[in-house]
Amino acid sequence: MLFLHWEVPSDLLTPHLPEGLHLDTFDGKAYLGIVPFFMQKIRPRFLPCVPGLSWFLELNLRTYVYDEQGRPGVWFFSLDANQALAVTLARTLFHLPYQHARMTATNRDGEVDFSCQRKGMDELARYQYLAKGSSLTAASGTLEYFLLERYYLFSTTAKGELKIGQVHHRPYPFHQAACEKVSMAPMGWNQFSVAECAPVSALYSPGVDVEIFGLKVASRTR
Image (cartoon, rainbow, N blue to C red):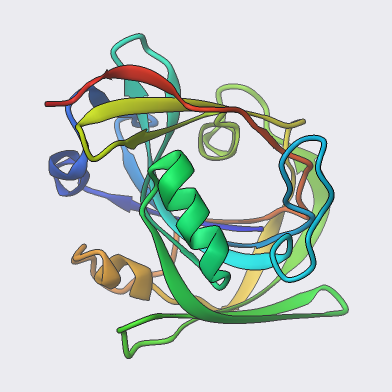
């Protein structure tokens, strides 16, 4: 997993949030994140992995929010994946804005070369990166903790219901990331106009095992 984050004005993001969610900030600063990663051995509980379905690539564009009960979580503006059935299932079961994309990735001696081209878009988003330094875990109260340790996700249904889903995993081990190539293209795909600049945070994680639980109704958004 590569976690890339940019500081952006709060008023750039707030109009794109549904009723019932509030933008979460760190020291008064809002963050827009691009996260490319590998999905491996994805399966429903008690069922086996399926070749061609349980392994795929994903890239999401996200920010951080909390609901009326103060529960902090992730709001996804988009999620790109290269597995068409996974896209359909995630849209149906989790009401998340998945998009089908052409994606490739290689990992040679720890150096990852990851690319994503969303269906219908000309621009290729490419990321070349590797871990540097020692493995760490985020301490509470740090920016890294704010960006990495999120245990709820939110989505909305076609009927306007705000849904909440819980995820469970051990704290992310992470390194600082050395990035040779970084693309901001997914922001443009989602109609966000952000000046080209380097991310303020670039973190690499070798990953964790994650459990995702069923969605529940948080509130009605319209």
